[in-house]
Length: 637
Image (cartoon, rainbow, N blue to C red; front, side, top):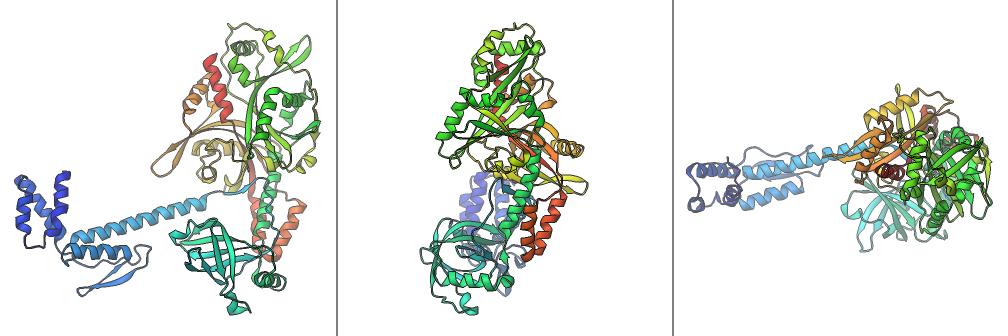
């Protein structure tokens, strides 16, 4: 039949009058403007929709809702609330007749329910496949013990509504509740509630009428249930509930099990950070406010980069920190209200002049402003003296009054030689390194460096790869604690943790990177690689188009692609390095594992097995701003 909107609208208007005595006259009057075939098709369609439906509708085991029987004219249908409403609305419109139209609406509702259930199942599968994570440098310590106790409670909202719930775990200053899912409870975060411990009075001597005030600090939906994390408003610890919990912790630990998940999280974080520390190829820089020396952190993987900066001038990194264009960034960080990060891109040139090596430090901003510097860089490349590019990422901790930085080498494809440029070294004189004036460099050994807990200020994130059959797959992510000053995608936790290889540029690039890492020996590292990622929206989920920058024949070719992507917020450039892990657990963490073994032996076994399956760690550093800045240079040259 024709899909003419006017005819469809006419059918919807007339179908509910089919069982009325005046239908014939009404139909003739309303369809007199139609042709004979159109009038016939409209009547057939109305008749089909309005004639009585055969059979019964049974939604049991078809949709995930509460189903009730509904007797009608000697037959029993099985509806949920929404289907019952559609059925009764249909009876009202069609003068008590259960029609095909009503049946089709209910079946469409069933299809909608099934599609929602499938979508939710797919989302649950994606969530289950998502990477686990921890925040780098977080202590994961509790000042109190928590026990797993299941007991009935009543939760009262500010408007007087009451909900029955069960405790999952409880401590002096907080508890976790499990409730049936209710949409109105999803907006409870930070709300104040009252809790009555009715279940405790059934098993212990406890006043169930006493109310205790809590604030909702977290909520999570899982398996059609809602889990609320509550924190007590009164933390003085001098009431019946506090005394009851203190007695239970001291007398009934074995029965109710002390919750040691925070300790398990600490083992996971500290253990993986120790592997990550060995794989860091950047040079971490630590500078205490007012100190006369900056500490350079040695790792097993950054010796080459560190030596290159100390080869001709031992305090060159200290002089870099003293540069006005670096200090201006540090001052911005100090004024920032929240912990944030800033990046500085620079070129370092080493030239043998009169048998003496001279170093030059040029900020990218200066090169972008002065065309003579671009010409000199091009002439140096043509003469065989390349300018090496670096990225210095900085942050500032007000609590510790400490500047933390990471110095990374940025290796790009070769720039095309411009032999027609004249070499003018005079323009480099103001950027010549002449020795640090106030700062000195202090080299920290790996043992001393680990004690600095540099991961509290980490400016990169990491992926940990585990053995899965014959392959190595990422299963855990370490996320930097800083959220300010990051590109949109680098700060997107869902993008980081979705286990679909997006971070590594898609299936092909991810496979190539992991295979290259597997070929590296335990005492070697995967050389840094830069990936250009473009996230594209599809109908169901995000897709990624990833390219390794080394695939381009020249940087000018790569720069054209970068400038194209830079117009889109869904572009990110990542510097990726990696190293195999040596499976060794420190004595301190073994002590924590022994403590977990006392209460949850299976959890301790899981952690030990997990560390044995760990194969490698990849460090991921954002270099989007640096690549975008370098790409702009090719337009000016």
